Amino acid sequence: MARRVRIRKGQAPGPLTRAAFRERFAASFLDPNFDAERQSIARIAEIAWRNYKAGRKAPLTRKAGAGFADPDYDLSVEWSETRARLRAAERAYRDPATRSRVLVIVGSPRNDGTCPGESSKSFRLAVLARRMLERRKIEVDLLDLSLLTSEYGRRIYPCKGCVSTAMPLCHWPCSCYPNHALGQTGDWMAEIYLRWTAATGVIVVAPVHWYQSPSALKLMIDRLVCADGGNPDPTSTGGKDPGKAKALELAGWSYPKHLAGRVYGLVVHGDTAGSEETRRALSDWLDGMGLIDAGTQARLDRNIGYFEPYAISHDALDRDRAVQEEVRNVARAVANAVTLARAKRLAVPDSRLAKPRQK
Image 1 (tube, rainbow, N blue to C red):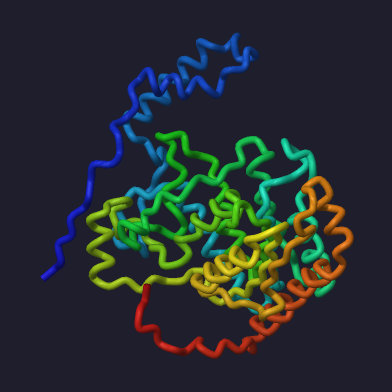
Image 2: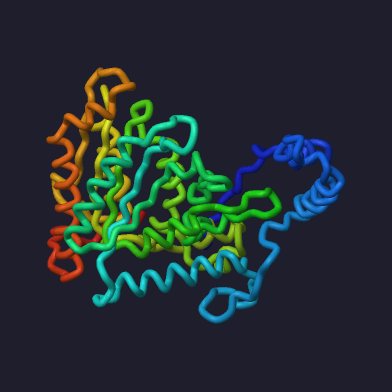
């Protein structure tokens, strides 16, 4: 007999009023330079209001077709295109003829193109890693998350937590965005999923913010939950139907790890405290997704300019030749591990052990 599960309701408020919606919509056009087009903006606001009321999350759809649980389901064209790119990247990743690629991620929100007015130490350390990898003839993809703070329209939306309702409700890749009805468009994660999938190795370089990972990095981390057990078929849950998703999980779910087997390294730096704890948390996250660490020297946490003024922290990095070489060693270790992994010679002692818990 199927287990009945109650779906808990009552948290979300009702929809916005028309006046509240128009006020929020107009906030993007405060600049007097828009004054000449106020009537045009009002007409566009009215269209946006109607789309909001109608819940037009995915205005462009097509039938899912063969290979899906429900071939007649109307799938988002944007989601379908992202899925197709990920599948092509996965095929290339598994092709021995594909050149090895390491994704080097700058996890700091700071750069010299906006308010801080100065480059981050994370960026400088990432460049050291990139140069070492390039010397080893490995292709490098530098993902600088600080662009979230300095580029127009560059955004990563927060994870909505679908996985906590039921794992199959969390789709791979994420189908929560774009949501055109709510104005949640231009989500960078569609591209970032592709860059992770294409990589044979990953190095994350990040500072400590309040004893934890910076918000820019954490946004990406949370949105990668769909890579750890996510459902590649949104039609199997009728889109976002929590009842269907719960039933599917309770019937037996395999929690597929879509990025497992890739190699990783970490560089976490602080100035007084928190670097070790943050590095451990990031290691646990990557281990949990099924990535393989490249050894003890590939997981680095250090304080740079311990208790020195922030104003001279770059000078402290200039002086710290040891930490610079340690970052190069992270890159060397990842390069070695990637080479072994591509040759299927990277030893993972527990790789064939059966897990008593799938989740």
